[in-house]
Each structure stands twice: as structure tokens, then as C-alpha cells.
Length: 208
Image (cartoon, rainbow, N blue to C red; front, side, top):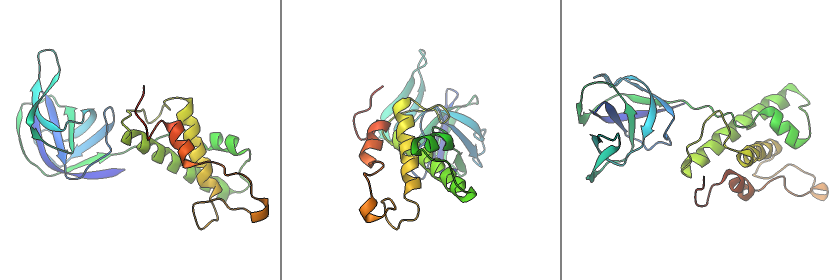
């Protein structure tokens, strides 16, 4: 869960724009909760757009209009069926709760080819899976994708997320970013970050 500070708010043609103090990774289609702003802005919303210019309203065809003379960062546009409200300073918060579930403990155990030997193993593997889901989702968002938190985009993203979770698990007991092994018995590395990024479809031009 992340909480961001609201600095400004406006509403035009039944669409509200909330500006935050901090930059966020919030993207289109995700859910946010606005609180403490007042003036009928406090509610739970699905994000419609992330504008970078002053919102001017909606055309008769339903397209968003912007005043391109004014660049405004950290904005979130949502549907809000109330009267217009001129852009003004505001206080309050935007809460963004995200729980990605692309890969699972079972997927990761299948990839590793082992079952958890103890309860501690299971607990740590669960932590690694949660971390991998969160990290891979953020990497996709930063690359410009608009993904579901609960439905993995495709098989390559599933494998990339599983591979990253397995890599985190294999680093257990080490002091660096490598795998625990006996020097003379070590085999090839389980994964490379380059391979994970390739499977996630990041660090390159976005594709459908």
C-alpha cells in the first residue's frame, strides 16, 4: 500500500483530476482511494487517465481535452459525477493498494524442482513470490504497460516472474547478489536479470 499527498483538485464535465505531491507508479485501470479532500472528491475510483497537461473538459465525442500551454505533473484523472470545481489547492491523500498475483509458490516450486522442506522454507518462498510479483509488476508499469494485477499478461511474463522469484529464493543464505554454493560444485547460474527483463518485455520498445 502506498499513500500520496494531495496538492490540488479540480472537476470538469464530471471528471475529477487529483494532483499529488509525489510522482507515482499509478496507471490507467487501477483503483485508488481519495480521502480528506472534501468537496465531493473523497471516494474510491478507477483511474481513467494520467494527464500531463491542464484538464479542460470532454468533447461531444467523449474525448478528453487539455490546455497544452500548462504542463502539470503527478495528475490522476477519474470519473466523478458532481458539479464543476475550479482547480485549487487541496489537502488529503491518495491511497493505492496493489497486490499482484501473477506467479505462485506452486509455480516457483515446480520451476525449482523441489518442495519446501520446512515451514521456514515455505514462509521464505512465499515472501520471495510476493516480492517477485510486486517487482515485476512495477517494472512493467514503468515500461508503459497497463496490466491486470490478477491476470498475468502472457506466458513469458509468468515465466519471468517465476524465474525472478526462484532467483530470490536461491540467494538465501548469501551475503551478496549471487547463489549459495560450494565453489568446486557450483553450476551455471539459475537466472540472469537480462533474461527476466526479456521475458517481462521491458528495457525495449513496448509491444502489444
